[in-house]
Amino acid sequence: MPKDHAAPAGTETQPEAPDAALMALYSNGDPGAARLLTVRHLPRVLAFATRMLGDRAEAEDVAQEAMMRLWRIAPEWKPEAAKVSTWLYRVTANLCTDRLRRRGRAAGLDDTSEPADGAAGVEAGLIAADRADALRQALAELPERQRQAVILRHIEGLDNPAIAEAMDTGIEAVESLIARGKRGLMARLAPRRSELGYDDD
Amino acid sequence: MTDRHDKPRHTTGEEALERELARLGRLAPQPGPDLVARVLADADALQAQRHGETAPVAARARPAGSQWWHVTLGLLGGRQGLAGLATVALAGFWIGADPPAPITALESAFWGVSVTVEIQDDPLFTLED
Image 1 (tube, chains in turn brown, orange):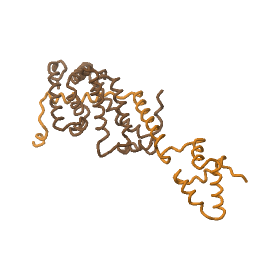
Image 2: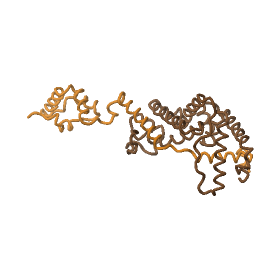
Image 3: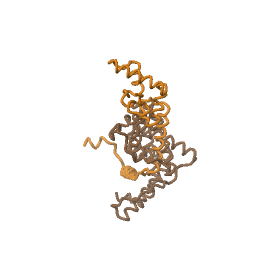
Image 4: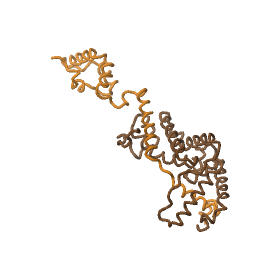
């Protein structure tokens, strides 16, 4: 039975504290630091892992493991060496790569279909849902490194230097991966362009 | 005019694709309470393990009840040692001098502050008349 984590955060932890300060507080035993770091970073770690793996349960395992590694590294954390978010993306990417290699196949469609925007009409909503599914499918079919780069750039919103750090590569390589990835996506989506309503944009 | 040339030109298809990718980002799956609980349980367990083994006493939450006294008594040589310290401290008080320096240093190293008042309040440390 999991513990009740609704208890108030430690009095030393300030909600606006920078990540590096929270890492130090966690290392020093502050009970609220881990909660703030989790609130800040777990959603994006989970989202990235879900998009990479296409499987919610596996993505949750990866997200938990990535956060566990963050707790483990906390005492040796060097703020000048990396941002927590970038470090987590890198760890998550590596964990996903390991999983994908173990699977020996590309990720399938994920099970994260969410309801369409409530403001949209039914037909538009269906088209939007179809677009999202088609895009997930196309992403899943991309080579792994291209998929990582496209997700980090256009879904997670990282800039190219941060992506280069997260993927342990150079900025030019990132630019190339993104460009090839987008070309690959467009090629996969092109046959369904009218069906998915892109022509209305 | 120059602003338009600051960014690379996109084809319509590329712009549409980027818009769709951004839209997909807004549909990000959110962690459920079970996952959050697992992550925080990991954090708490590792923190407790780490501090239970290696943290300096001053950085720990102050132990309560009998555990607190176990640690204190052990460090001060048991009840007999504690009684000896009390005798010395009282003697220092009665002769109008400061408590002996070695005792003050020992207290400070352990708690970071003097514990004289709390020792006197505890029934374990009730002095014989």
